[in-house]
Length: 104
Image 1 (cartoon, rainbow, N blue to C red):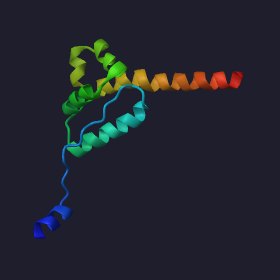
Image 2: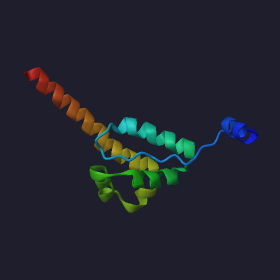
Image 3: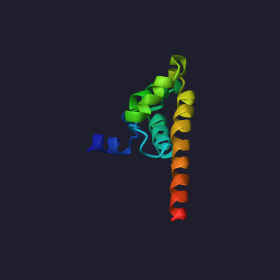
Image 4: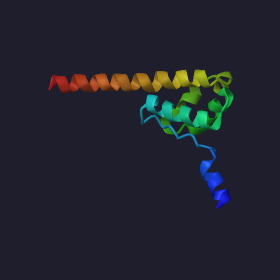
């Protein structure tokens, strides 16, 4: 009973896995989840870069093809590249969809 109480009262953070990103969900929402995992795991900027690369799937993984090797260890640079591709892509898609709806 005593050890159970200690466990219930203890703040223990098991390794929180970063969610995968394939470009289909909102980049902004994904980044919030990723940053939450990074804070929970106390990842350094370099660890965040590695975890982000591992989390990429499908089309999102193709961003690495155009990323210089020295930038693959830089979380901020990787984030900028993904943001340019996916945040801008969503805005364009949303605007085209609105324009199409308004033309009907």
